[in-house]
Image 1 (cartoon, rainbow, N blue to C red):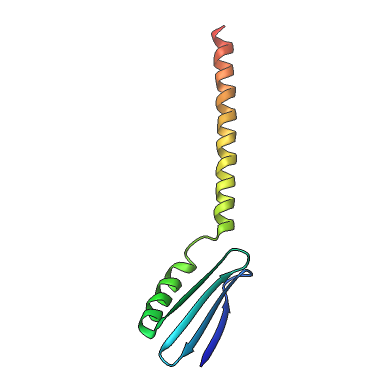
Image 2: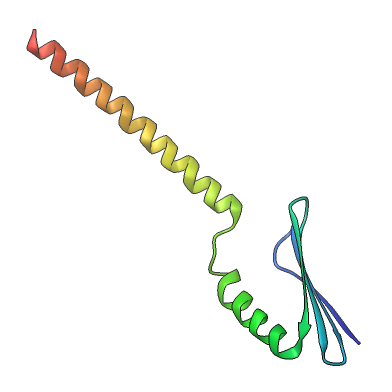
Length: 94
């Protein structure tokens, strides 16, 4: 039996257990989610290929949250500039 534990980041752990031709893949995110996949070698290899190709390409939740906050700040700044321009237009019309 093979038992391997990998850490993707400080909060995410991947545990792989092999017993004969069956595998158990566990993905644990601290305080967030757990995912377990049990299957044969062929299924496991396909899952590993998908995880390897997508796992590191996808931004983390924190990165997405930071991007959203930055976009919200830009939107707020743009709205403030629009209000200033509207006020100027109203002033110039008088």
